[in-house]
Image 1 (tube, rainbow, N blue to C red):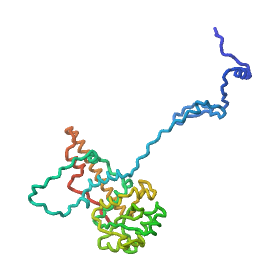
Image 2 (image 1 turned 180 degrees about the vertical axis):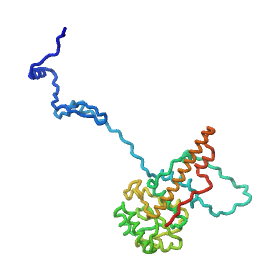
Image 3 (image 1 turned 90 degrees about the vertical axis):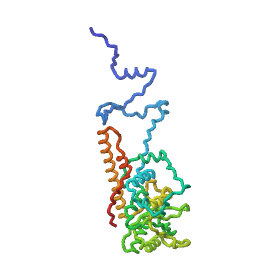
Image 4 (image 1 turned 30 degrees about the horizontal axis):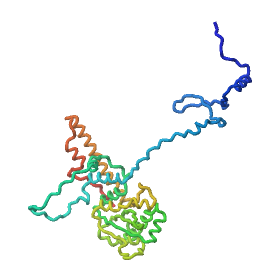
Length: 356
């Protein structure tokens, strides 16, 4: 037996409109057509209606704030002073045969020590120093190194050829011309020094320098020149011409050229006010204020890549020895592996051949 349906039937649309008009609550009737949409990711079909502009939005919904977007953490810069310091420690460990560690002549000690002399106790390392000793991160690529690391590598690579350190004061006219475009200040000074050396020596001389401002705000430069001690006077005259006529007392001290004894120490000195210099010039913290000739950059990069290759070989040797030790005895690596990683071998790495 069939059961009667309780769903009412309407003969025309007028009956439906009359019924809706009698309802106590008026609902907005959306008249926009239904649009078939496809989800791009799942390829599922679903129906949705377009937004209707003439539909009133409830007050509670209008006051609800939009959800805040999650702030993405800023990407860490590939260059920083902390990373340069870490790379410097690693470079000193891999190649300790630099000018800073060479033995110097000293006064002979007496055969019998004095009874009043006392030995200085060894100061224990703090947590920071112990953490630096455990740090075994690989050296970055050359393009991610800072100015201080590049200056150290360039001085180490050509220290056997003879290097002169120099400081140059600029005249007011040259300084104003260089600071006319702060972003190109080092390019302007690089061209002036290059032309002056070409005029006095007749050939291209390799050099590198860093911009620096005094506490009074005066621009000057510090750098290195790859010339021997015999051409010191000629290099001084070329630098004085590049710096312009110095309108100050004692113009003979405008350019100071001396033999470089410690490349790492000079690199640390020229980088002492790099942050302030970048701030005055309106540069970012990672922007380089170092200018060097192409040949000097090339030999510095060659030296740096040699250090990276040696570090990778030591790391691979340590891993293979450690795995073999664990397989044989199940104990920790031997002390020889630790000495290898600490860079206490008696031999020093072969430096690249430099042809300037």
